[in-house]
Length: 256
Image (tube, rainbow, N blue to C red):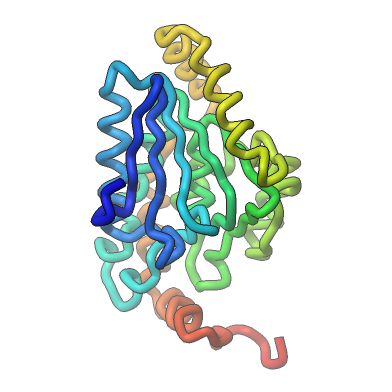
């Protein structure tokens, strides 16, 4: 393992395991993590020895979403919203199957990362939340990959309330494919990887293309503009500041 990196890569027996390894900031989507994850994905997708990609994480948190320390007071580039869609598109359109192993909390952009994958395995310690509205921003970019997965009325409620929900709820709503006990996550991921690797590479590519053809195109441009506008807005910056200062945002009614 390279201690200077926030995404660790291991390739063995046809599987590229990409591990988000920045537990000190809850595997937030910092500029470094986004850049390294994209590079690792591109390398895995062009490596003929790799049949399946696994997205895993170190520490107790899968991914807490955008790095709000970088987003505070910054423009759209610092917020990362202008490059995050490319990362989601890379996973979503990958010709090789991508499996997510979610062993802890996923929030906002972290939910988007999981949703872009082909198979999501979540342990009992995994929780999910579209926390954007509570920060004064909008789950715009991730909606492109989340909404094709989820039952519409479930996504409606959870995106509007920003409520935290568990793995069984995520599975019932279509976000998670397999919700298992924590001790079975690794075995379940291994089982899914084995099943995927049993398919022929060309057949998998064409089958995935067929499946994606029945979902809407990832039209990120208007979503990107909406996301960037709200991150830079007065409410967005207040919500980010309130989160960092561990206080209620100004719009929260007194006593809540």
